[in-house]
Image 1 (spheres, one colour):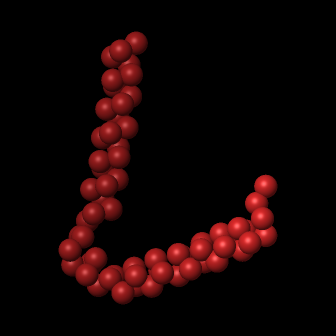
Image 2 (cartoon, rainbow, N blue to C red; image 1 turned 120 degrees about the horizontal axis):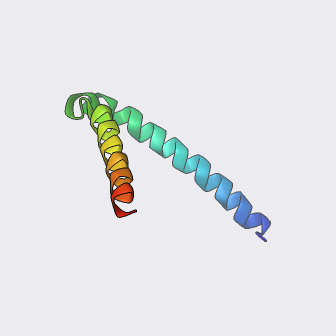
Length: 62
């Protein structure tokens, strides 16, 4: 299905991309603490609101 070269490229790409993302995140971690306080809580609450909304819409349309 995939050639050997494609498999090597995919493995190299995943490793390089992961390293770049970790390096970038570590570089910006102090700025994230300043500018994005309580963001995880807001995202979690937003996800719960959206989920509950979808459930209520589904129940209302039944």
